[in-house]
Amino acid sequence: MKFGCALLDPQDLDAVKGIGYDYAEFMGKYLVSLSDGEYAALCKKLESLQLKVLGINGYCPPALKMAGPGFDMGSIKKYAKLCAGRAEALGASMVGIGSPQSRNLPKGYPRMTARRQLQEFLEITAEEFAVFDIEICLEPLAPCFCNFINFMPEAVSIIDEMKQNKTGIIADFYNMEYVGEADLDMKDFMPYISHVHISDDDGGPDKRSYLKPERARVHQERIQNLIKAGYQGAVSLEIDCRIDPDRAAESLAIMRAADLEERERICI
Image (cartoon, rainbow, N blue to C red; front, side, top):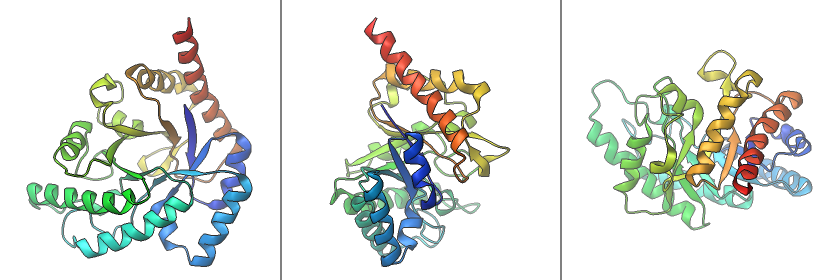
């Protein structure tokens, strides 16, 4: 199993590589905002470190609507095309579709209309990323972030109705814990889960942070439950802060210990 870290600043790439993470994640909205020169410098930095940006989180800015007022298919396609090209050059294999402010619905907005719009958003986006063999993954988000698609079964039902098959789901244990899903049997969701996020917080949903040592066993059992259910993908630490080398290394050790313990159990 591979373990990565989501970053807010490319200056932290050296630290992530030195600590021993297998890959990095960057926000899609950050990649798209870069000038051509800044993007070229980022690519050069990653090449020098021999580090890939395996995943993309924070897909789009609030102005690009997945559902609700302001939904515009032309803007969705244009943005996806640019983001997909930049993500592919960094080595990405998946892009997470979370971006709560892009799908937070105003009171009274028809849910069936929002559902149809989200499916159109995902289909358009998936078509652009499929050109580069990158899978898009819908991420259920807790009600503390948005009011649309908060539970794993909701995400599954959206994916099941779509024509595009290059689409999966992100299992984010922070969001899943918030809605009581983190310790469910993952077997029913396994055909859909393409990527995993994990984190604790330092006081609130906008302060997602490193794994707390006192909760190490909780996180390890959740990772092991995924492995037992058949998951063989990657797990990313998703944080809202710059890299603290000691805490980042501690979080990586917690995750790797879960993987090692489960592999040793299987071999016995």
